[in-house]
Amino acid sequence: MASDHRPIWTLPQPAERKPRYTREQITETALRIADTEGFEAITMKRLSAELGAATMTLYYYVRNKADIVALMQDAILADLLVPDDVLKGGWRDAVAAIARQTRRTLISHPWSLTSLNEAQFGPNAMRHIEQSLTAVASTRLPLAAGFQLTIAVDDYVAGNALHTIESVTRAAAAEADPDMVSAAIEYGIGLLGSGDFPQLSAMYAANRDGQAEQSGPPLTEEALTSQFELGLTALLDGLATRLGL
Image 1: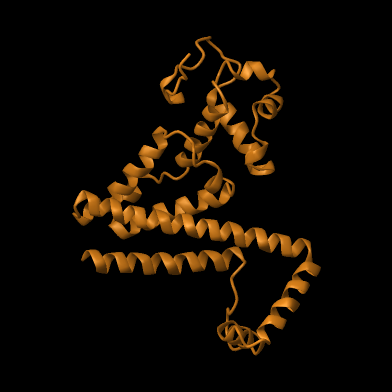
Image 2: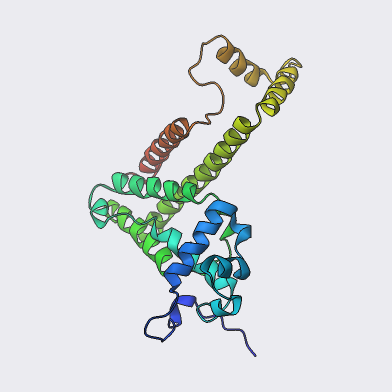
């Protein structure tokens, strides 16, 4: 028998008048598990237990785990959407607002950037793209150029969010195990003494002597957000110059 590849959104929900569960409830539960225990914890058995249902009961609402993953991604993408009024201002403000909302959402689901690559395309993915294209429509750029502009910003946001998640994770690990940090610092200082890292040596010296406000990688949320804003401004400035906006 051929596999059913239809997107979950094309299939009707259970026809009973008051179904015990809804797709929204299942999705919300799956997201909660992933946020607290990691994406790997999402199994049909684990989700059924959290809902208080038999595993086979879940198959009445979704066909397989792929359906659940698709619903999870679409729910996250719904949080990327900005109010329509935001899109009515200048293109830079609109693009920046979408970028900030996207980054906040991705950071709030730190597993999502690397775990949803095979999820089926859903309605909120289309809405996010539509909003992004609407944000740059006032530039009067050709459609292809406007799309490339949104891709450049999306790529920057995804990369920055991934870096932020890594930095926050490292900071939490360092706080939990300060001895590990001390050992790593001691090792790093020893390498600086080899003379093979002149730029890093200069950063370390400036930080040690109080000559630089921030000579190392920022690990606080405030510093990471400030770094994101600096990069976003530079990116938009560069795109504006390159595209004649």
